[in-house]
Length: 344
Ligand code: APR
Image 1 (spheres, rainbow, N blue to C red):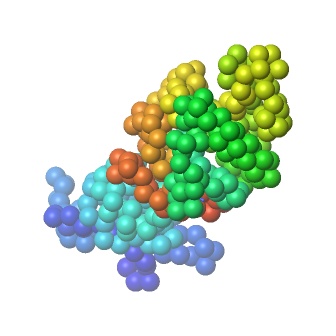
Image 2 (cartoon, rainbow, N blue to C red; image 1 turned 120 degrees about the vertical axis):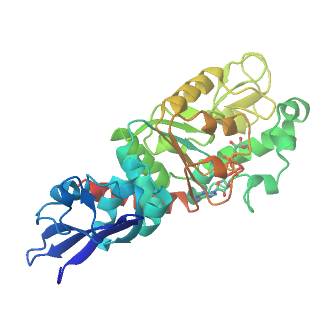
Image 3 (cartoon, protein in one colour; image 1 turned 180 degrees about the horizontal axis):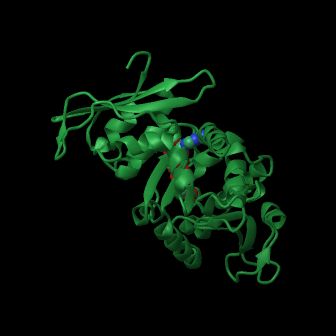
């Protein structure tokens, strides 16, 4: 087949199959199948060369009667690597080999899974907000490298050392008033509006998902934007907490509505998140070290594929279908670009 290009070449013990292509001046392709060692069916030798076809769908028909996805991939044409990956992926055979030879990047795989998901759920942690200037907790410059979490964020300390508790959280509230959602928050908000993200749960308490436009956000660890009396539960304003006022109803200590160490998570929010993750066919976990229970137990309840996008390793990486080491904003921007391009 002179001046034909190899589109796909696979090999097996009994011989190999090639799908070849010829690019026409107008950029469209003709295809033909070539069997590079004579094979036989009950009518005798199978014709080495097939007839020529002119669409990708017909090209796939030329090879569909052979178990090509189960054979060893030898060569894939760069212009057809995504088409061939889609076919190989749906077969479920030799996925690592096909992903390697089709040169499918982590972001292409993530985008492919997002595009084909029916129920995508997202779970975020503090790494979602570091690009907004909000320090996370356990990275090298995280808050817990400067403060002892059990000295400022444990229920016992609220009751035994209210001044230290108040100083830490009034400082955090004032700092968080200065920050804005980043691209990652905004992309997740757009994906929720487009129906791509069906449910968003976060461990974060600074409400940047909501400020980016996300709705119905499951705040597993509560939020700093509402305050109540620790004694009688009466609501109060964040300003009255920052000013260190006492509860107007009972004179008790005010506190933000967050889950402190030693406290139970809000049961209704936990239950709903558990159910949504169990229902998901794709769970995307972004920016969390998965060091804190019980949230770090949620990924194993996922109903389908689990992807983690995190700068550092997590203790559960080996259990996930895809681990992407990268910055949330960068990866989500690239994924959104690819999703948009794939719709054209
Ligand atoms: N992109 C991706 N990942 C990032 C980024 C980023 N831009 N910035 C930081 N990360 C990663 C870090 O590598 C780290 O592993 O985010 C993770 C954040 O982990 P933690 O600081 O432990 O925060 P988180 O997992 O949300 O903590 C859970 O612990 O202290 C409690 O209540 C607090 O909700 C918090 C919980």
